[in-house]
Length: 378
Image (cartoon, rainbow, N blue to C red):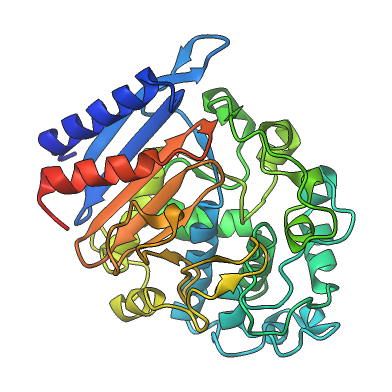
């Protein structure tokens, strides 16, 4: 461990202040630079009711930050020659080619341009816990936008990408097991859970929903893409069966240490501890803006989404969800309520911001600024 004391102290001060002023309840941050852990800090309460405090081993729901793991798993398959980005998804998953989706490519799926951002009709938490039911329902969907038009797959992304990974795995593993054996275990990432085992549940921080989400407008694309019945909120995602299910787009439960270590692979040009997961060229391609770039996204009422062709978000100086990156070469995935993970291959910096108070506050930007200032980078 090579903690950078000035950076760690600066982050700790930010976290203490965020907890003291009520912006956060419990929060955890870790950062890597050039493959070395340099920040490991936390503050506040994991469970205000019991008084359980946050420590370095506390686990947090990170919602859509999970999409980065799904995208990276697909890049692993491409690295091995098992997936061609420009081939139709139906080449690997024939059922997906139904109802007008036969032209959707893997690259379209990665960059949220399938034209079918919606979830299956009448989806329930129970259905969401059934991988086969979800992939069958998604395969049967009809695009509601032209294929190639940006339309954010807010929840469905993980099943689309995860099923391509599963279908192209010579060992026929579940998506959860693929991530564990191909990404987590080889790189010493101990707490990168997409479906938690029962024994780690006591370490999970209790979610506090300060967003107080309301049902989306009836009939809107947002309602179809993020149905209220499976909302990204504590009453759904603290259910034991949901925690234990493989929900590859929004179901991740991680520590900041493990999440930052995952991002460190991307920040370090695709390798960590002298073991290579992805080529430097592939990582660089993942840091290129997708076709369609920052066009307004119909799922979120025309909000521009700066997404890369590799399935990650990018910094554009405008999106409030990526202001923490402060670098046009960085990639990230934000999660509902303010969680964030990011990597900058240009500087070698990777950061994870995990917390339990879901809100619109941007503590991650304060942390990012503190780290860069302490390191005198960016």
